[in-house]
Length: 100
Image 1 (tube, rainbow, N blue to C red):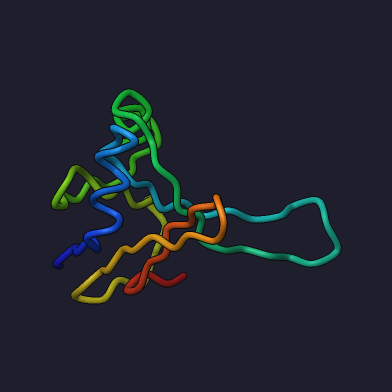
Image 2 (cartoon, rainbow, N blue to C red; image 1 turned 90 degrees about the vertical axis):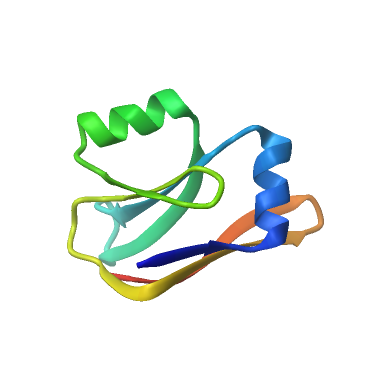
């Protein structure tokens, strides 16, 4: 499996002094509709170690650090691409190659 970061995401990670990206499964358990989706966020090294050791996340080495994936069954393609989108002052990490 190959993990690729866009240049904009690499620059953003260096500016924020972060190296770990976590893809997590988020679900709503207190609404009438059952919604489950993937949630992407930056995590620091100590929390990344916690996810790996206690929550059994898988760590995949990437260009600038690690990509952490949960122990749930996810559909992974041969290439996972991560990018960042900016709208006004909000930043959002986008991904392709990972599905529930």
